[in-house]
Image (cartoon, rainbow, N blue to C red; front, side, top):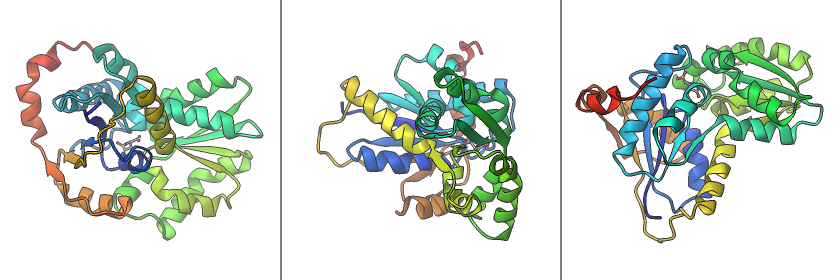
Length: 280
Ligand code: DGL
């Protein structure tokens, strides 16, 4: 089906999902929204995260998308049910695919999760893991300093290493063999994490697992784009696009030329009525 896929995240972290989608589904057109004006979501309340997620989704609905990806662990953990209640298209979050992969890959049933404080406090990952594997020992660690480091482009170096060591210490001591990178920003730190864990943990990249799930759904629901038409992906942000463009290009390994800043406040004002009918 010749319609785009919509993706949102609070910032540029969702590009980890985009990277995988481009590999696995090169024929699909992607429309991305990064809410860079309101990042971080990971320290905000459930109510606010649900409101933001609804607004981000409403923005993407303008493009007549066929499937919505919540490429933000925080929004997936706290707002996916709200989104599913209000929109009837297929909605894929990053939590379920990541939790599933962890239960398949662990050998000693010791699974670690790192994420933002809101994701960790929601227990969304732990609940999904327990549903699939009630014998699993789950160890969760909130890592509030990692998102700012990634947004700054500090993917290695002493400060990042020391911060990671502090956060990962307990999980290493607990002999965790599988670690869920429960925040869309963390795959960018993969190399640094591998060094600290000395390659002893399977690192679960929710982005990669999510792209696999999206592909399965598109096939099952007959939604794959079968045309060989070349599409240009579009990226929208709610604040200055320069940083998104710079770090995003570095990360995707290609020049991100199609990034536009939108006046999100104006969009929200214009759509006030639509959003007001939504009970959160
Ligand atoms: N995108 C968020 C997540 O995956 C991290 C950034 C934020 O706190 O907004 O949890």
